[in-house]
Length: 225
Image (cartoon, one colour):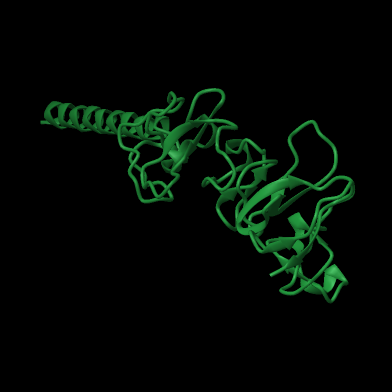
């Protein structure tokens, strides 16, 4: 009888050791998978799933924002742009002015206006004053988002990033008060001749609204119609 009890005791002890070993294996497996925030299957901020997506993805491949800087390979940025809900790897510094962005590294200008969600423009690119613009990298001075001047005047519907260096025939402005002349108004970011203003340079009238006299050696002076 005592032998039977001893044998049963040894069997119970062996069974307990097996159960403990199985628990340890399960715990080790759970720990090796890493934090829940970095495993595939979690959702990105845009709502797209990361299931089956590995880190260090290539250009134009779907990527998982949860991996942070490891989401894409070198020189690439993981982002969901242009209304997309699935994040993709984009080349750094390839987004033009006014194109959507989430970080500076995406923009050719090196500056993403995160409030607007758009890249700031570089000189000669179309721009929006609410987004801003910058001079070409490597150059000095400032840049302004305003209408360009031409022999037909200032077209306020076409704004571009302009180098703000030297004297300007039609000064840059943000408000009419900055123009300091009753004959002018601030239009398209430039001080432009108001209706009826006389003796204005031709390119400082509203687009196509200048009636000019004979040309001279100096700037052609006109009446803004």
